[in-house]
View 1 (cartoon, helix red, strand yellow):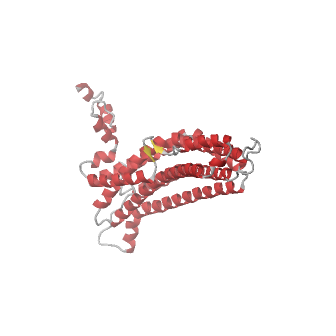
View 2: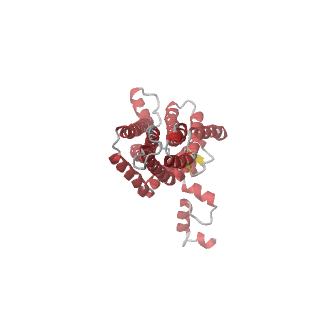
View 3: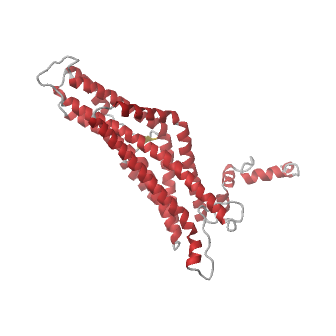
Length: 375
């Protein structure tokens, strides 16, 4: 090891140690050194260490969404192709109105999510510079300290270069917010389209079982209106399931990771709010973050709840109508449809966690318990 401390290797060794990639260091020590903020504050300033952990987790969330959006472009294209195709072939006025209804819901969800993100973003990046305006409007005997958007480490005089760092942080917040909105809103709109297909299947099922001709107990295949409608209904149901499977396979693992990270950030943010007694501006900032994480988690769970409810309704619709008055060929098809509907369609996180309101409350409850542990 002495040779590594000699003039031949000491520069390389110093650089690698400071970068956290020196092979003779303990792995956990290397990891901490790679994260400058944690290296500086861990064990000395718990609040700052928690803030750095939250920033790192937030960056991981954005990277996961970006990577997922890139790697699932082919699957997303299949979903969009299905949307284009069905919007062009649905001629029935009621079916078209169902598509429009759920597309409008998706649009409103997108507008609401983007509106909140813009509101939270403006609040998050403007609150740190209020001290500058307060020094002008209501000066004190001492200059109020400047607050940074992110309490990061830039290896420069951060007070002297406050304006440059502030602009950099604002650009980072804006770019990551755009990526966040793009990924989440497209996912929500795609699920709304699936839900619309389930609603149309339900409508077609109702129409096929109310179009029974009582005067024709044994109609021919060409004249069996119920049978022909059931065939179209099953084909559309199959397409809805295929689209849902594409979304499930593309985003399931992402949802699992994001839910875990959201739960940790929610807990850490709550702890920061509890510890920053008297720091009104900081409490306000992190309250916006806390609300944002709650909305983000709810925005992730809600589509799964919709899919679950609409798929369950299909079973009740098929079972409670007058299916026994249909022709024998129609009854056979209905058996397969009812059998498939016995297993509700659902979105999951990693295949182990069903996205519904019940599990959302359990996650929220777990986060509350973690707050006590962290505090």
